Length: 326
Ligand code: FDA
Image (cartoon, rainbow, N blue to C red):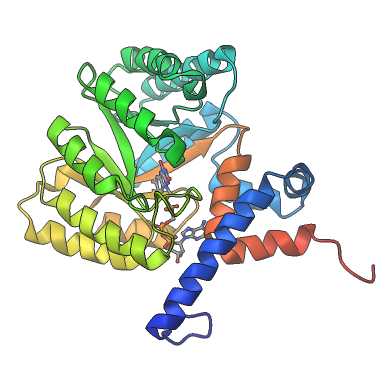
């Protein structure tokens, strides 16, 4: 539906899609400027948004929420916020903190703990070897917990795929994420199916150049539909991670028509978004997992969420831009 409440004509739809793409690009770029960063960080509307999207500052906050959701048959993926670290010491600390989170989850009775990690938090920018070493440490300590490697910008896709394929041979409880927006994803899906690496399929949250990625929302949705169908028809464990109701409806239809065991496919949503949809899917008997970020390094995560949704952005912009006549 358009903003006016009527369905746009196809060419209107592609213009809107292109405008949203360019808005997304500009927002993410502007948010890196330090005066904007400081204005967003200090704005009075930021705290409620952070509270909506982030479980709290500590692992204890995240585990407390996990246990409450578990009561409602909702599983979680725990994500310690932080990315793009520049020193080995920071990368080592992130791996230590992940081990502490896993220990806490086991100790507090979380069913089958599950964490999401970013390789740039584990030192990927310092080399694949550093990230591999830290990820191996987490995996060796996992004690049955599932570890999902998030996918970051396309600068890191090749390295992420390499690190995951390498470690998956030793640690089957390791999965990763593929982004429908990237041209390479159909090929990566076949590689992961051959290697048996569990996949979470997402649209992609990073601003990507036209050389490597679809630029319009319509093309990304088309790719997602195709890739999701391919994966449902395979035997690979699959997480369908989207809030897009049309895609979810298509997924449900494919799952019903496929010979898939329902335990090997789940829906995933982000904390703070579409709780109505979350509860409805649980009620229908689907496996549901919510992605729970926690920690103090929330800024890049918040910017990605703001950029996805013009309404969120407008709220912040209204509060950080200077007002005339005051
Ligand atoms: P889309 O953006 O089309 O939105 C559909 C509907 O969802 C909207 O109409 C609105 O109702 C709601 N919605 C979506 N985003 C919103 C927001 N920010 N604020 C308010 N409402 C919103 N990306 C990535 O590149 N690497 C990764 O590892 C991951 N991991 C990941 C895990 C999980 C569990 C999820 C759900 C998503 C990711 N993503 C990700 C993010 C993903 O790539 C994508 O950016 C977001 O999911 C938004 O796209 P959707 O497909 O949800 O739909």
